[in-house]
Length: 147
Image 1: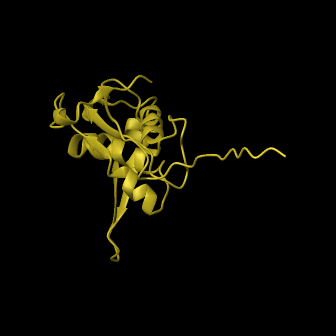
Image 2 (image 1 turned 60 degrees about the horizontal axis):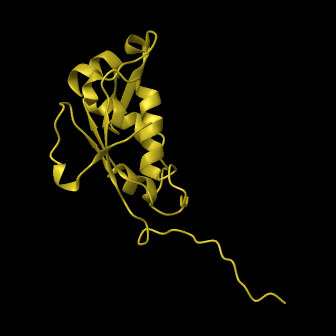
Image 3 (image 1 turned 135 degrees about the horizontal axis):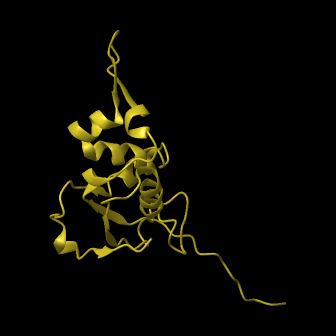
């Protein structure tokens, strides 16, 4: 009888190594960029991906205000919020959002692609969005992410 035991190693939050990546969003399409960012935040690009553990990496997005929409989505797409009070529902088009809160467009897109659990809340905290080309995370030595 063979006494060798082969076990599949399951990664957890303590054994996972988290790296920092920089993504330049200038000229990128919102949805396609959001899927790639969500995949990195979840850790799906790693060989030791575990669905129930936070094995993802940190993502810094620069030039988040320079993303683009295809077709006529800039005028047609609506973002709705609701305060919880009667008559408290508001909606803005993508064009208005890009003027008032350009980072929220990409943040909402990525957040919708993450799990709606405590794990998803922890993963979205590893996303940092900046409108300009600079960021304050140089001490973490982020490297550009190749898609």
